Amino acid sequence: MNIMLEISMYPFNEDFKPLIKSFINKFNTYADLEISTSATSTNIFGEYRYVMEVLTAMLAWSHEEHGRAVFVSKFIPGYVVE
Image 1 (cartoon, rainbow, N blue to C red):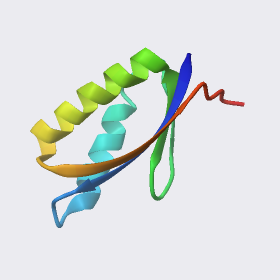
Image 2: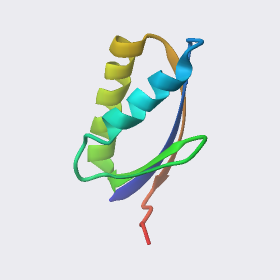
Image 3: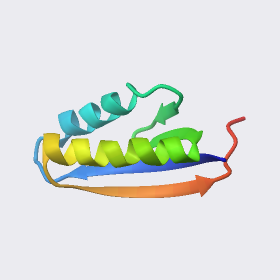
Image 4: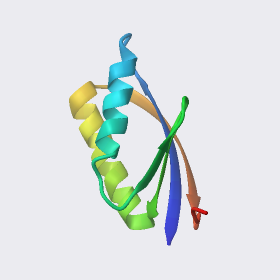
């Protein structure tokens, strides 16, 4: 099953833009994902289990690398990219 994850990052840091860009760039290092970034969020498309594994790794990496942040996410299971 495929899934679409829409995620927005809100770091607890005044200089937040480099942290968000770093988060997006790190997501782009993972193979087998389709990633689309807009001004307010990033959409990640892929196989459900893989997207969840990547999300788990990304949240841990972000906390270690950048400290605290709020993430707002939407999940659409069964989404098919057309």
